[in-house]
Length: 267
Length: 167
Image (cartoon, rainbow over all chains, first blue to last red; front, side, top):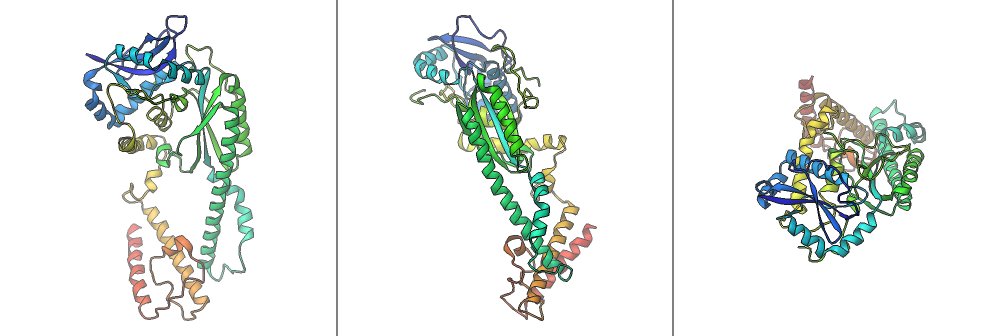
């Protein structure tokens, strides 16, 4: 017996299926589509033994399984980008009829949400404090500015403490300044996007980057403005170069902008 | 693992001026924060609770798993994290060196300001106060001339011994 894993929802077009071949899904299955109420759901049959509540909850605790499944879900959703709403990972129905019932019951909200993301993709922009470069930039000025008459030759320990305090103050100023610049980056890019949002900054353990992340933004950009958006990112990277390291990722399916207008009694 | 070009089925891949190599495998952290947390929420027949504690647990475990990957990439942040590293001798020495210099700074400051015979310092013996807010010359308000040296000296001796062992 199988359950039905839901990947994405799209408007039903004139052509039977807009996707010739979809990549393999979370259970290595071949996803297909189910139609109802002029909507198309991208679904895949998954074995119930692996995807009932208990099994799924168990799998979620297994990083290897989870990474593989998350990447598979993303692969399938990515194949529908530009016209479909991604569905949150882990949405499973008993069968395809239940999915049809869902499409019919929520047709209006789904269509409204679809209109908001049609022909748009999500871009991610992260900004890190560029510690190496901002330190280099201010080194000379900092050394020359301090030293309120403390002979460093006489008292190396005192000189050391002073140097440390200066360095710490400088690091704090650099961080505050860079955080302000990251705000400017976010505002500038939000102007070019239809919608924008921010994810929490990722910890260094997740990124492998020791510099603090100051911006983890997501931007929903119409395809017609993509080139402009990319140029803006390049320009901001240049302008804020000494303080920030700016990273662009995408295009993403509009995960961060796929909320339904009403949560309601979806169950 | 091959990632299909995300634009399949919707026309030619667009050009990305100024962006480096757009279609690369997605970074796992980026993927998790989007795929696990986001997307339309329509409660399924099989309910799983991805939010709250479960998600945190998952993330923590993934981070641990990612240490191996980071090592492959030559990133060694965990080796400098005392909770993850069993013993990095160079690191110990550097820290010891730093503590000694801080301690020296405190002593000099104390001596030069208001305590000419010196040697009392702040009396903590660990030097960690300097990490936070040591003003040279401002840390000697508590004289304790009798027991301060005896409190600090064993600590010095202890770390000195550790330093020799590390060599």
